[in-house]
Length: 530
Ligand code: XMP
Image (cartoon, rainbow, N blue to C red; front, side, top):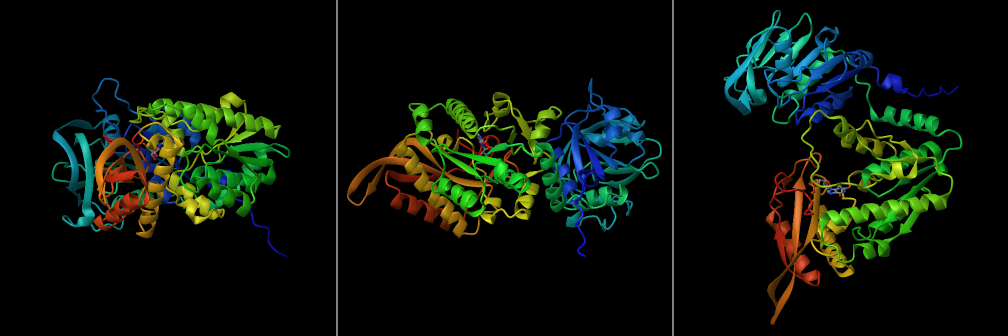
C-alpha cells in the first residue's frame, strides 16, 4: 500500500529557530539571510521587544545585531532584560557584543579612532565558533570586516578572548560555559569570507538547530494554511503584475483553491514591449489561472496627460490602479480575500528599530487596497526573503523567465520618461528598452544584473545622419548591481556591449540620435531617475 506523504506542519517547520534582535544596523537583514541560508528559521525583532515575548518565542539561540549607538549614550538600547539568562546561546555582533560586555560587568571604551574596513583576524582559540577554520594570521580567509567606534577594554567575568586584530585586542570573546559569544567584526557581510562558517557554527553546532527550514515544506504548509484560512467557499482576488512576487502568490493560491482565485491583471499601458501579451499567455493559456485582463492603457494615459512631476505621476497611477481594481472586484462578485505579495523585508521595515529606510520616493503599488476594499488579507510570502521567493517559484513550476525577471517598478515606464507620458515617448522608450534587454540577455548578463533599462531624457541634441543635421532625443542606459534595491552600484558593462546597444538604438529607434551611460551609484543617486 502506498504510504501517504505527511505534510510538514507550520509548527514543525518553525520549531528550531533563532531570534535576531535589531539594534539598528544596516546589516541586520543580512544576518537573517545568512541564517536562513543554513536552512534555519529566524525572525528579526526590534531590540525593544518585551522579555516575556522573547521567552514565549522560545528560540534556540539569539543574535544581537550591530547598531549605531554607543553603550554610553544616554538612552542607549540594551535589549530585553534577561536575554543573557534565557539559557540559550547568544551571539553579539559589533554593538551587540558591546551590549553583552557592558550588561555583564565588562568595560567598553572608546577606541582611538573609528576602525572601519578590512582587518586581519588572528584566531587565538579554535573550535566552537571558529570550528573548522585554520586561523593562521595573514591568510586571505582571515580577513574580516570591521566597523566600530568602541571596543572592549575589560572582559566580563567568565569571558575569554577568542581572537584579535591589530586594533582590537578582543575581536571575539566567549563565555563557553554560559554559551555567550561576541564578535567585534561583521560575519554577515561578504567582506568577511569566514563569516558564513562562523554563523553556521553558531546556529547549527552551538544552538543545535537542524536544517529543517526548506522551501518545499514551506509550499506544503502554506497551501494547507491558505485552504484553512479561505475555507470551503471563500473567494480570493489578487493583483498580478507578472513580476516574481505576485506570480508566486498567484500560483500558490491557485494550487490551494483553484478557480476560486481570480487574478486581476491591470494593463496600465506603461509596460515594456510585449509584456502584457506574455503575462496573458503564461498565466491564462499555459498555467490555466483564472485571469481577468483589464486593458486600461487609455484611462491611465488620459489621467497622465500634461503631467511631468514624478510624485504626481506616482499618485495618479496608484489612485487609478485602486479604482480599476475595485471596479473589477465588484464586477467579479462576492470576494472575501485579497492576496498580496508582501515580503519579509516589508514586514521588518514596518517594525524596524530606527532603520535607515527613510522614505525617499513613495512606492505604492497596491498599498491602500485592503483598507479601501474591506477585504481580509492573505500574505503567503510574509516570512520570505526575495531569494527564498525565487526558490518557491521554481518549486511550484513558475517558468524560469519569470523566476529570474529583473524587478520593474509599479508605475512602469512612466517614471523612466523624464517628461510627459505620451504614446510617442512610450513607443520610443519601449524600442530602446527592448534593445538593451536583448543585448544584455545575449551577453549572458541578464541574471547577474539587478536591473538594466533605458531612460528617455527631456533633452534634444544635434547630430548628423548622412548629409542631414538632426535634432533629436537622448536615451540614457542604466544597469545596476544590487542585493535588495536599497543600495546599488552601476555595472561596468563591457565596451563592446555598450557599443552594440548604442549603435542599435541610434540606428533602429527613430527619433533618438544620442545614447549616454549612467555611471551613478545609489546612494547618492537612486536606481530609477524619477
Ligand atoms: P529607487 O529608484 O528608489 O528604486 O532606487 C529602488 C527599487 O524600487 C523600484 N521602484 C519602484 N517600485 N513602485 C515600485 O513598485 C515605485 O514607485 C518604484 N520606484 C522605484 C526600482 O525599480 C528599484 O528596483
